Length: 298
Ligand SMILES: O=C(O)CCC(=O)C(=O)O
Ligand SMILES: [Fe+2]
Image (cartoon, rainbow, N blue to C red; front, side):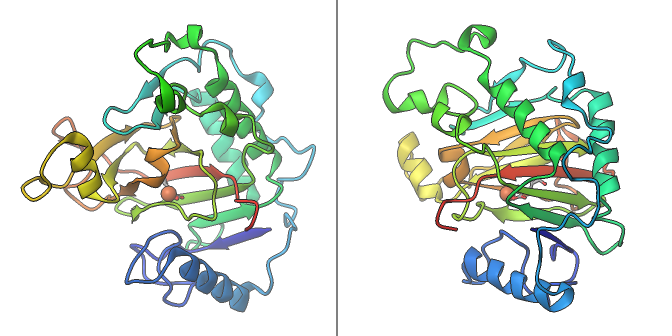
């Protein structure tokens, strides 16, 4: 099933008739209600969504320019970083080479999802296009390199923290399929996405690949009080925590556990918010690919 539409933030509502953006929790409405509203609006515009690729190149055997088999071993792997302060948030900065980033962009372009200027978000549910399956294989491969490859082994990590010693805990990394939902978001300079926790209809273990413009994604706790209690701080006098993470082109972010459920993520590309090491980042068009797995009941 393919859905292509315009995100509503910060652009005005386009296809979704006033519904808020896809994941944001706003105005007291649950994410689920927003999702349903969006679905109804989409159907009003496009009719019922179907599984058809529209001949866009996602079908079996059409690898186009993104071909995982050309991966250069050693070049693109092995630079996982744990994001300090957020358990379950991992960053792999050099996940995709420049060549592979270009191939991926070209492949996405050939899908034709964004041929209309107003369309800046496409979602696929169920069978993913082959290039996205290949991308998820690369994610699995990168995340599954054993401890010695990364020197992660840390004897002080025990018990439930075991969950956080790999970019993706084993029960998520080896599920079948790893991902069955895809979102491609295209952002023009100045455009971003509001602080949100991804909907509960998706399982734990979410991956985001960044292309084109670099950007700063901010993470803030869903409940500042919980974080403060954990850190042993009184919550009344503490300022809200916001942890910036620089997403460079070709980088991969993986969120699981606390990072996925207890932290909101946000990209604010309004002037003054895209600052890294004291410098305002130059904004260009940005494309991101989010891969998730639907919960069995969805
Ligand atoms: O564009 C991004 O990097 C984030 C997208 C996102 O958070 C989402 O699709 O839920
Ligand atoms: Fe998200």
